[in-house]
Amino acid sequence: MTSRLYRDRGIVLRTYKSGEADRVVVFLTENNGKVRSIAKGVRKTRSKFGGRLEPLSLLDVQFHRGRDLDIVNQVETVDSTHNVFGDLDSMTEAIAVLEAVDQLVPDREPVPHMFRMLVGARRTLLTRPSPLVVPAFLWKLLASEGVHPVLDRCSVCDEVPEAGAEFGTFDVRHGGVTCSACRAGIPVSRAALDLMREVLGGGLGDALDRAFHPEGQTLDDPVINEVSGLATKAFEHHVERRLRSVSIFERHDPGS
Ligand SMILES: [Zn+2]
Image (cartoon, rainbow, N blue to C red; front, side, top):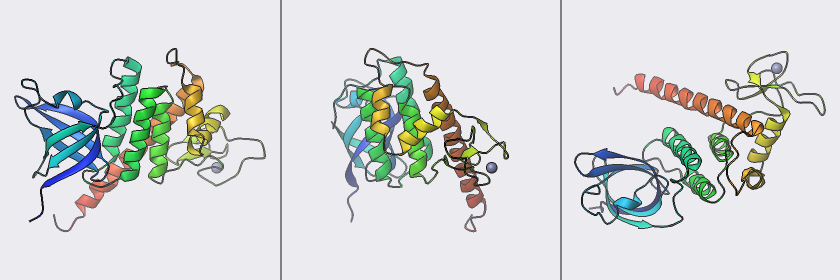
Protein backbone atom coordinates (compact mmCIF):
# COMPACT_ATOMS: atom_id res chain seq x y z
CA MET A 1 0.00 0.00 0.00
CA THR A 2 1.36 3.39 -0.96
CA SER A 3 1.87 5.98 1.72
CA ARG A 4 -0.61 8.76 1.88
CA LEU A 5 2.01 11.08 3.34
CA TYR A 6 4.15 13.30 1.17
CA ARG A 7 6.40 16.33 1.58
CA ASP A 8 6.84 19.25 -0.73
CA ARG A 9 7.90 22.86 -0.76
CA GLY A 10 5.10 25.27 -1.46
CA ILE A 11 4.10 28.91 -1.56
CA VAL A 12 0.71 29.82 -0.06
CA LEU A 13 -1.50 31.28 -2.81
CA ARG A 14 -4.53 31.99 -0.62
CA THR A 15 -6.34 30.81 2.47
CA TYR A 16 -9.90 30.95 3.67
CA LYS A 17 -11.80 29.99 6.79
CA SER A 18 -13.52 26.66 7.03
CA GLY A 19 -15.84 25.54 9.81
CA GLU A 20 -15.16 26.60 13.39
CA ALA A 21 -11.41 26.45 13.56
CA ASP A 22 -9.98 25.20 10.27
CA ARG A 23 -8.45 26.98 7.35
CA VAL A 24 -8.32 25.89 3.72
CA VAL A 25 -4.89 26.63 2.28
CA VAL A 26 -4.13 26.61 -1.45
CA PHE A 27 -0.45 26.06 -2.27
CA LEU A 28 1.60 26.08 -5.40
CA THR A 29 4.06 23.28 -4.67
CA GLU A 30 7.31 22.46 -6.37
CA ASN A 31 6.48 18.89 -7.42
CA ASN A 32 2.74 18.41 -6.97
CA GLY A 33 1.39 21.51 -8.67
CA LYS A 34 -1.47 23.34 -7.05
CA VAL A 35 -2.60 21.61 -3.87
CA ARG A 36 -5.76 22.41 -1.95
CA SER A 37 -5.39 21.46 1.67
CA ILE A 38 -6.97 21.92 5.03
CA ALA A 39 -5.12 22.96 8.17
CA LYS A 40 -7.16 21.68 11.09
CA GLY A 41 -7.63 23.62 14.27
CA VAL A 42 -5.34 26.45 13.25
CA ARG A 43 -7.80 29.16 14.19
CA LYS A 44 -8.37 27.75 17.66
CA THR A 45 -6.06 28.14 20.65
CA ARG A 46 -2.43 28.74 19.82
CA SER A 47 -1.76 26.54 16.86
CA LYS A 48 1.83 25.48 16.28
CA PHE A 49 1.81 26.51 12.62
CA GLY A 50 -1.30 28.61 12.05
CA GLY A 51 0.67 31.84 11.93
CA ARG A 52 2.92 30.57 9.16
CA LEU A 53 0.12 29.84 6.72
CA GLU A 54 -0.02 33.35 5.28
CA PRO A 55 -0.22 34.18 1.56
CA LEU A 56 3.27 34.34 0.00
CA SER A 57 4.85 32.19 2.75
CA LEU A 58 7.41 29.73 1.41
CA LEU A 59 7.11 26.53 3.43
CA ASP A 60 8.20 22.95 3.64
CA VAL A 61 4.97 21.03 4.19
CA GLN A 62 4.04 17.48 5.05
CA PHE A 63 0.65 16.60 3.60
CA HIS A 64 -1.63 13.67 4.14
CA ARG A 65 -3.42 12.87 0.92
CA GLY A 66 -7.19 13.20 1.28
CA ARG A 67 -10.11 12.58 -1.03
CA ASP A 68 -10.96 16.18 -1.72
CA LEU A 69 -8.58 18.28 0.33
CA ASP A 70 -5.19 17.10 1.55
CA ILE A 71 -4.44 17.60 5.21
CA VAL A 72 -1.58 19.79 6.39
CA ASN A 73 0.36 17.73 8.96
CA GLN A 74 3.56 19.68 9.48
CA VAL A 75 4.88 23.01 8.36
CA GLU A 76 8.43 24.35 8.39
CA THR A 77 9.46 27.77 7.21
CA VAL A 78 11.94 27.60 4.34
CA ASP A 79 12.62 31.30 4.02
CA SER A 80 11.80 33.48 6.96
CA THR A 81 12.18 36.78 5.07
CA HIS A 82 9.41 38.81 6.56
CA ASN A 83 6.17 39.01 4.67
CA VAL A 84 5.32 42.23 2.86
CA PHE A 85 1.87 42.41 4.32
CA GLY A 86 2.53 45.58 6.26
CA ASP A 87 3.11 47.57 3.11
CA LEU A 88 -0.09 48.28 1.22
CA ASP A 89 1.42 48.62 -2.27
CA SER A 90 3.48 45.47 -1.95
CA MET A 91 0.47 43.64 -0.56
CA THR A 92 -1.61 44.54 -3.60
CA GLU A 93 1.21 43.42 -5.87
CA ALA A 94 1.72 40.15 -4.00
CA ILE A 95 -1.97 39.34 -4.22
CA ALA A 96 -2.00 40.08 -7.96
CA VAL A 97 0.92 37.69 -8.52
CA LEU A 98 -0.61 34.94 -6.36
CA GLU A 99 -4.03 35.31 -8.02
CA ALA A 100 -2.52 35.08 -11.49
CA VAL A 101 -0.87 31.77 -10.60
CA ASP A 102 -4.06 30.50 -8.97
CA GLN A 103 -6.09 31.33 -12.08
CA LEU A 104 -3.64 29.76 -14.49
CA VAL A 105 -2.60 26.53 -12.81
CA PRO A 106 -5.00 23.59 -12.68
CA ASP A 107 -5.04 21.39 -9.57
CA ARG A 108 -2.38 18.71 -9.19
CA GLU A 109 -0.60 19.34 -12.44
CA PRO A 110 3.14 19.65 -11.70
CA VAL A 111 4.48 22.95 -13.02
CA PRO A 112 7.98 23.19 -11.50
CA HIS A 113 8.97 26.02 -13.87
CA MET A 114 6.06 28.09 -12.59
CA PHE A 115 7.05 27.34 -9.00
CA ARG A 116 10.55 28.64 -9.76
CA MET A 117 9.11 31.78 -11.34
CA LEU A 118 6.92 32.35 -8.31
CA VAL A 119 9.86 31.88 -5.94
CA GLY A 120 11.70 34.54 -7.96
CA ALA A 121 8.76 36.94 -7.94
CA ARG A 122 8.34 36.41 -4.20
CA ARG A 123 11.98 37.30 -3.60
CA THR A 124 11.62 40.44 -5.73
CA LEU A 125 8.45 41.49 -3.88
CA LEU A 126 10.26 41.12 -0.57
CA THR A 127 13.56 42.75 -1.51
CA ARG A 128 12.89 45.33 -4.24
CA PRO A 129 9.16 45.81 -4.74
CA SER A 130 8.04 48.09 -7.55
CA PRO A 131 5.06 48.51 -9.89
CA LEU A 132 7.05 46.60 -12.52
CA VAL A 133 7.00 43.30 -10.59
CA VAL A 134 3.42 42.31 -11.47
CA PRO A 135 3.47 43.17 -15.21
CA ALA A 136 6.92 41.61 -15.63
CA PHE A 137 5.68 38.45 -13.92
CA LEU A 138 2.52 38.32 -16.07
CA TRP A 139 4.51 38.70 -19.30
CA LYS A 140 6.96 36.01 -18.20
CA LEU A 141 4.08 33.75 -17.24
CA LEU A 142 2.42 34.24 -20.63
CA ALA A 143 5.71 33.61 -22.42
CA SER A 144 6.15 30.38 -20.45
CA GLU A 145 2.66 29.37 -21.62
CA GLY A 146 3.79 29.86 -25.22
CA VAL A 147 2.08 33.23 -25.57
CA HIS A 148 5.06 35.46 -26.26
CA PRO A 149 3.91 38.88 -27.47
CA VAL A 150 4.76 39.67 -31.11
CA LEU A 151 6.75 42.92 -31.02
CA ASP A 152 8.84 42.97 -34.20
CA ARG A 153 6.16 42.65 -36.91
CA CYS A 154 2.43 43.16 -37.32
CA SER A 155 0.65 40.41 -35.41
CA VAL A 156 -2.17 40.40 -38.00
CA CYS A 157 -0.49 40.62 -41.44
CA ASP A 158 3.18 39.93 -40.55
CA GLU A 159 4.36 43.21 -42.06
CA VAL A 160 7.71 44.39 -40.65
CA PRO A 161 8.13 48.09 -39.76
CA GLU A 162 10.68 50.14 -41.67
CA ALA A 163 14.19 50.26 -40.22
CA GLY A 164 14.23 52.31 -37.02
CA ALA A 165 10.44 52.55 -36.87
CA GLU A 166 7.92 50.83 -34.60
CA PHE A 167 4.25 50.02 -34.94
CA GLY A 168 2.21 52.15 -32.56
CA THR A 169 -0.68 49.88 -31.61
CA PHE A 170 -1.01 46.62 -29.69
CA ASP A 171 -3.91 44.21 -29.96
CA VAL A 172 -4.28 41.59 -27.24
CA ARG A 173 -6.60 39.47 -29.40
CA HIS A 174 -3.76 39.03 -31.89
CA GLY A 175 -1.10 39.00 -29.22
CA GLY A 176 1.12 41.78 -30.48
CA VAL A 177 1.71 45.06 -32.26
CA THR A 178 -0.29 45.95 -35.36
CA CYS A 179 0.55 48.00 -38.46
CA SER A 180 -1.32 51.13 -39.53
CA ALA A 181 -3.15 49.22 -42.29
CA CYS A 182 -4.54 46.62 -39.86
CA ARG A 183 -5.45 49.35 -37.38
CA ALA A 184 -6.33 47.10 -34.49
CA GLY A 185 -5.73 47.48 -30.77
CA ILE A 186 -4.74 50.34 -28.52
CA PRO A 187 -1.85 52.82 -28.77
CA VAL A 188 1.49 51.70 -27.36
CA SER A 189 4.62 53.81 -26.96
CA ARG A 190 8.08 52.93 -28.17
CA ALA A 191 9.35 53.11 -24.59
CA ALA A 192 6.76 50.55 -23.47
CA LEU A 193 7.75 48.18 -26.29
CA ASP A 194 11.41 48.59 -25.34
CA LEU A 195 10.64 47.78 -21.72
CA MET A 196 8.68 44.67 -22.73
CA ARG A 197 11.59 43.53 -24.91
CA GLU A 198 13.96 44.05 -22.00
CA VAL A 199 11.76 42.15 -19.52
CA LEU A 200 11.26 39.23 -21.90
CA GLY A 201 14.70 39.23 -23.44
CA GLY A 202 16.98 38.56 -20.48
CA GLY A 203 17.08 42.08 -19.05
CA LEU A 204 14.53 41.50 -16.32
CA GLY A 205 16.98 41.96 -13.43
CA ASP A 206 18.20 45.34 -14.73
CA ALA A 207 14.66 46.55 -15.39
CA LEU A 208 13.60 45.58 -11.85
CA ASP A 209 16.67 47.30 -10.40
CA ARG A 210 15.80 50.53 -12.19
CA ALA A 211 12.13 50.39 -11.14
CA PHE A 212 13.00 49.88 -7.47
CA HIS A 213 13.34 52.99 -5.32
CA PRO A 214 14.56 52.19 -1.79
CA GLU A 215 12.94 55.33 -0.40
CA GLY A 216 9.49 54.16 -1.49
CA GLN A 217 7.51 53.04 -4.48
CA THR A 218 6.87 55.33 -7.44
CA LEU A 219 3.43 54.47 -8.68
CA ASP A 220 3.01 56.91 -11.54
CA ASP A 221 5.65 55.84 -14.04
CA PRO A 222 3.76 56.19 -17.35
CA VAL A 223 5.80 53.56 -19.20
CA ILE A 224 5.38 50.97 -16.46
CA ASN A 225 1.67 51.81 -16.30
CA GLU A 226 1.40 51.19 -20.02
CA VAL A 227 3.26 47.86 -19.84
CA SER A 228 1.13 46.95 -16.83
CA GLY A 229 -2.19 47.73 -18.54
CA LEU A 230 -1.22 45.64 -21.56
CA ALA A 231 -0.04 42.76 -19.37
CA THR A 232 -3.32 42.67 -17.47
CA LYS A 233 -5.37 42.72 -20.68
CA ALA A 234 -3.23 40.06 -22.34
CA PHE A 235 -3.38 37.85 -19.26
CA GLU A 236 -7.17 38.17 -18.94
CA HIS A 237 -7.57 37.39 -22.62
CA HIS A 238 -5.40 34.29 -22.27
CA VAL A 239 -7.18 32.98 -19.16
CA GLU A 240 -10.59 33.58 -20.73
CA ARG A 241 -9.64 31.75 -23.91
CA ARG A 242 -8.28 28.84 -21.92
CA LEU A 243 -11.38 28.58 -19.77
CA ARG A 244 -13.51 28.64 -22.90
CA SER A 245 -11.48 25.88 -24.58
CA VAL A 246 -11.69 23.78 -21.41
CA SER A 247 -15.48 24.14 -21.25
CA ILE A 248 -15.84 23.21 -24.94
CA PHE A 249 -13.67 20.19 -24.32
CA GLU A 250 -15.82 19.16 -21.36
CA ARG A 251 -19.03 19.57 -23.33
CA HIS A 252 -17.75 17.17 -25.98
CA ASP A 253 -16.43 14.64 -23.52
CA PRO A 254 -18.14 11.40 -24.61
CA GLY A 255 -17.86 10.06 -21.06
CA SER A 256 -20.25 12.62 -19.69
ZN1 LIG B 1 -0.85 44.53 -40.38
